Length: 266
Image (tube, rainbow, N blue to C red; front, top):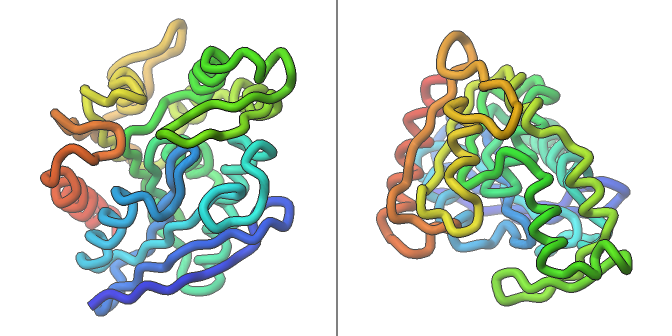
């Protein structure tokens, strides 16, 4: 039977981040760091179910909260994509120093974007898994700005996401637009597994095609995907929504695919 342990460790700027270690009852195949989506947290139902499903198959999982969300310290309006990436680095450092260096980064939605941005900077990482993740960060800045123009004109504003109000600052949007994630993705030197639904109501399926190297945005060059040492795999989840809440079939399928894919790199 698996075991769950609450942990705390320093994130960017000295903020204390909270996490949960899901530990298999038997020997750990390898460790993964699981990063959550924009404005959500480690206790999102899909994240908990997938993490525990993978742990039942022998994978150790660290799921944690970015600064300003869930149980972690910090103010959400002061965070951005850069701070998320630094928090992810600190999570990897914590796991490496406490248990064992993780072999995989796994991210849901915006957490997947951070995983993609950081993978090549973390030597222990053997592969990246994204679920419903975007292929750029600038589109989120544009979306938030359209939801409340005061963010840019007055420096901050409130938006409602998932029924909850969040204060968004202009610095956050500026940071989102400063990252060239498409280039990071094209140059990624780690195997990549992309899971995405064509019916995703939040992150369009075109992002999955771009991640897998099957499509481009604007003048971008195609990704060098699908061959050699850094293969890219796209698994489509027909009928699923963004957070996998509309079908009980999704979690066991996603867990099974990730389990089999990761075994190839351990």
